[in-house]
Length: 212
Image (cartoon, rainbow, N blue to C red; front, side, top):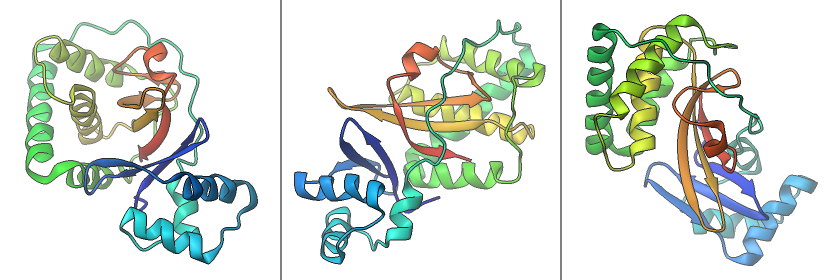
């Protein structure tokens, strides 16, 4: 993963420090320097040092480039009708939700994402929603109607992605942000289908971090 997540949206550079589990915005002058950098590929060394200090991390222009999610936000289509979840898939979904919940509480976002990255690093992403992926999504859809939690979209997405990766199914977990007002959201997709949300809910958000 890059040292930080970065989204460029509405003339704002928004950073995600997943190790500290917080979002950061720079003062106007430095914000403009970051925005201009992605147009010119040039940034004064002094500004880069000030940005690194503000973000609390060492920073190079190469690292800055790799922070932006390379793949632009996808225009998602509605997911197909999900099959009925089986008892076994519901139990498995509950188990992965419990693991994701414990990891998030004990190790925070950074540990959760690092674990997920390891699980999914060697699994090709799915281009379409297979029957097996749809069955897993159905189990987590059922679970979401019975369990509520703080940071629900993040926890549910971590659990769904873990479940899919353990079954050797390639999905993509994305964290997105928007401004006016600021908010963040998380979802899991396969190809151009969001597995655990409605496309209209996802559309306003610009990806700031994605795995794999």
